[in-house]
Image (tube, rainbow, N blue to C red):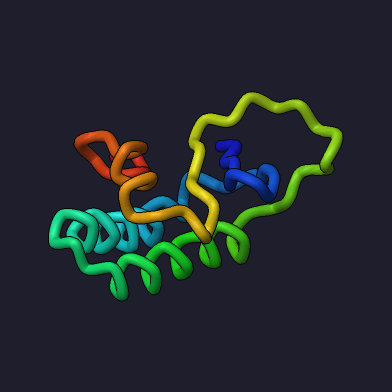
Length: 92
């Protein structure tokens, strides 16, 4: 799966990593719903770090369609809230 982190670029991520990412996504969703700004910042950073660590960066000139788009690390709680589906940022 191709994942885009807004403002950074794209990474290719194996489907086997989504269980770990979904745990962080569930935490992030709970923090957003609870208005926990500090927890939101910490978990968003952890989620993006996991994507960077587990994924393989695509070249800057690659034009692959992104199957998942994640917010930039400096996104606000309200900006991320507007990106959420019923499942959070990561479907499944």
